[in-house]
Length: 195
Image (spheres, rainbow, N blue to C red):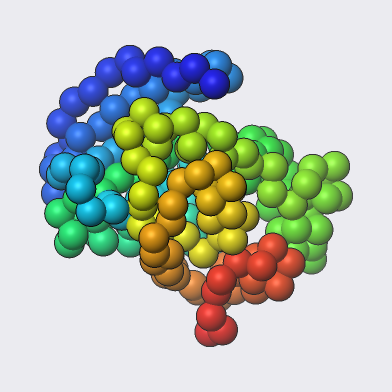
């Protein structure tokens, strides 16, 4: 997979000053690396975060995505180094329109996995080849991975990325997303503790 680095700049945020780098991928989408500090040396904190317009930008309480993104940025800021790989694979890879269709099915009682299946999609259609290529572009093969997702963890390890530590990233549980988080734990095997 050929990635093209197309732009880079400073990005001051409420969590500190980051560097934003934009990469164009063969899928025609632009993906982002948001980094802080020197990533060389000790394995840095890395968050592989899939785009979630509703959670990241519109502050939805239906998921924990926005809360996880904020928690990751806070942890990177506290450490003084690390990166978020922001991948444009909305709705666990099914796209925004289909995610909202899945929400409508959830409003009628389906859980997040059942809703995706009813729409003809797998429970999680995301791919991590792009994340692996971005890590290679950053010359990172030893990382501390901020995730609760065993599939993400296993994909990186299978590609030869050494995850020296998994950092749990549980945040944002509320009455609106409790069923969603419970389904992720029960049906997708996510490493989530009980409320």
